[in-house]
Length: 84
Image (cartoon, rainbow, N blue to C red; front, top):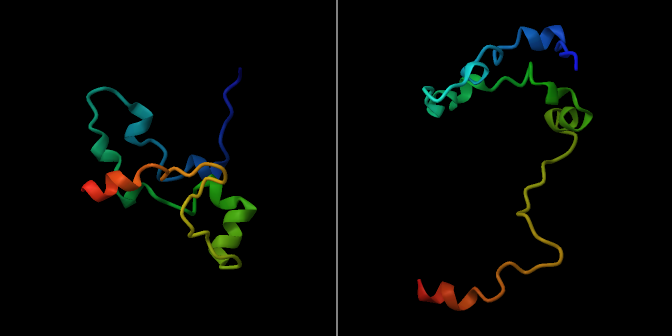
């Protein structure tokens, strides 16, 4: 399978050539934490229509907690909560 070359704006992105690109067991994962690795301008996901609408403020983000439609995950946990 031929390797696909990313678009030019992704090739020059700050998140290229990071410790993730040269990972080994000697690298502490802590070096990848922090805002310096976040760059929405070069993130390929920001070009998606849904994300463009969010960034412009056309839609509000969903802030509801995850609710499973058919399973009550709290069932039977009421008595354990009172023991705490």
